[in-house]
Length: 322
Ligand code: RIB
Ligand code: CA
Image 1: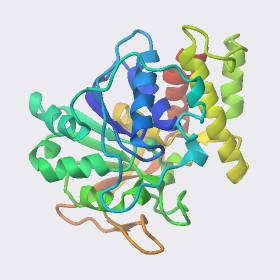
Image 2: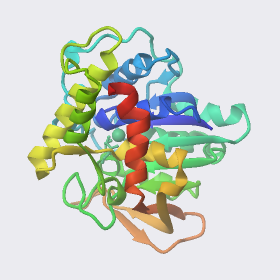
Image 3: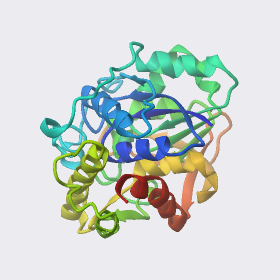
């Protein structure tokens, strides 16, 4: 399965990247970055770093995308992901060896479906700014994606950016509104399912210890850079969650979007049309309406949590830490 990953590369986007690159079913055509969790310069740097640290060395092209939303000023989430998007340890992170692709993200998003049979799946785990611009400039290309899986929205659960909004849709509500009204083949992975299971610190610690690598949190050792970086990034990410809710773990929002592209049957969905509020006190809120021809999307409403956790264990936790 050919895929494109559009990401605001923070901690859970990084884990999603590892899941995608450790899944032989995928051929990753490109990673495109967008401002969200961190400024897009950091997101691009993070994607360059993570993709080149996964063995065997085979990093996909990483293309630099939108530095701000369509209308509103950029909101980032350093309290959740660190000022650099990977736990706030920018000064200790290695500098990526390979450079970003020379083409802008939107150019790749619009070009890739044209270069072969329409079997490319697009997985978007950040604000939808790049996708909205690509839809404006080349709607035929965007319609050629076989499927678009989007992490975003909150329907029957509280928001994580204010009381009702989910972060990706809050940062760029206009982009979310345009994409969700486009009639493209879209599956939405909202907080309703991504917060039904968390990666606990206990699960992570037990794996790190069982792998015998008690030095993982130490400064990155050659060959173990990825483990050290992701361990420290998750440590920061989980600390925030613990302060917020007492949960000693972290939600794997973006890895679930990748897992759904791999194994669609781990979720149950329902068709609906979605209204996104773009201004006012409920900016970013996603409202469910009955399906409307030409703007119906599939919303994930149920998750096979144990299978998702097993996918994370087999394709992320064990390869990285055991
Ligand atoms: O609301 C969670 C989403 O916002 C995740 O994709 C996280 O990485 C942030 O982008
Ligand atoms: Ca994200």
